[in-house]
Image (cartoon, rainbow, N blue to C red; front, side, top):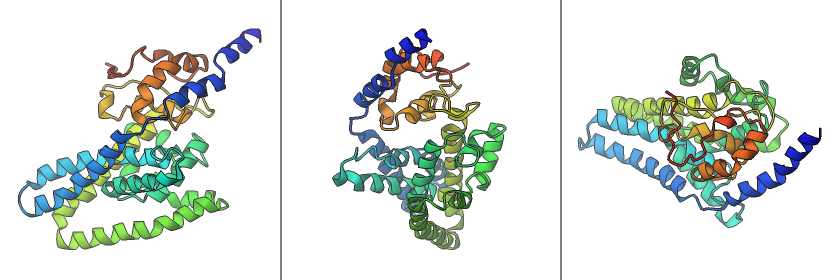
Length: 297
């Protein structure tokens, strides 16, 4: 008991929070550049392809890459990490959040509220909107479920959180945007069927699968419930720069205000706390992460 008290004092939550806060101040220009940049590149593909300046197959490859970079900038916006609590900059969260998701055809409102519930109820089989993805039988099942939409049953969670007025209001705000996407897609399918398939519909599917596998499945694979138990450190055969460094996603669950590109340094500073708190995989965290690809061979 004495040893536990000493550990608790040395690695107290107050000390952990103070360190985390020191990495939660910087303006995230990288995320804004990526979010607005990929959306701008994706939009530019249409006139380039339709006017024969760019081959459709090349447009498809670029659009798919854009779709894989579409979610993370919106994810940072969902946590208010651009405005940092400044009411005058709150518009920036919504602006980047909405624009970045055009490539994926998702409404920012609905992803924001469901993601907040994911943080509040991580690994809860009833209340966590990411539960089916995070606890799928295999990567194959994640790909299948995210491809056919069976793992994103937003209607189910509207029932689960029907008493949460803010949650319901966000759903209502999302409906016109979702209908607009459907209308635009329908019009484009009639006018430019092949281009619509390869520049928007299929890349959006690929981007959704990519996001689900690396944001939902791997970070929570084999974890349980509890602040220091619901997300893990892991390694992979893909260099971390190609999967948005989701090996480090556990620090985001502990301290969502830490900017994505500040997470490596934050983890280096917080590693003793993470090991003491027995975060899954924490003992495998390298001493220096910034340029470490975190590859497992």
